[in-house]
Image (cartoon, rainbow, N blue to C red; front, top):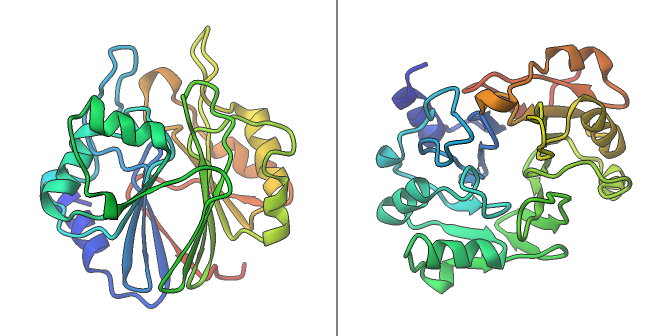
Length: 259
């Protein structure tokens, strides 16, 4: 699909179902109840010489025409991306949900001042409700970020969890099993020697099993040349969840269809 066609599909979607698009890397777009939500949108080029993008962004930020909420899990540039945020501010001026240090990065390093009325500074335990959407903020075991969170959203047709770049930590997300998550987006990657930034196979399985979502979608595995990992073998290792690989640009609908 042409990148312009994908953006048009996302922005113009009139489906009754809640639609979740995987944009590659950590990035998700959600259309639900007339609201368009982006989580960790990375629509810019590589920003670190140690990490090489494997594919161009699926969305041209200069063509964005709509966005209601932007959720940012932490300050790393593939989650809090200057080119992307500048485009949002120039074109659509959405509401943001982000940790305080991420906001300080945008203000200090990017030189952007976002209207405070559109910024919600979040930390674990934060809770927001708006037009049928409930957003709850959870901890993260991202040991390389200065301040990181993960997000749980109760949407029109199901509950969606996004772990950001969290590593596996025993029992960190066990409470999510009690709330019956429909779709969990969890990071996966092969760590370069000397790095510990993504859950590899066993830790991914542990996290997925602990959360117990109906469907678990690996994210981030495809973004960097240095940490690429094929998630397809994990689809055969589901334990209390269906592990489902999504390719970039594909979508998932809620409510989930029964097998």
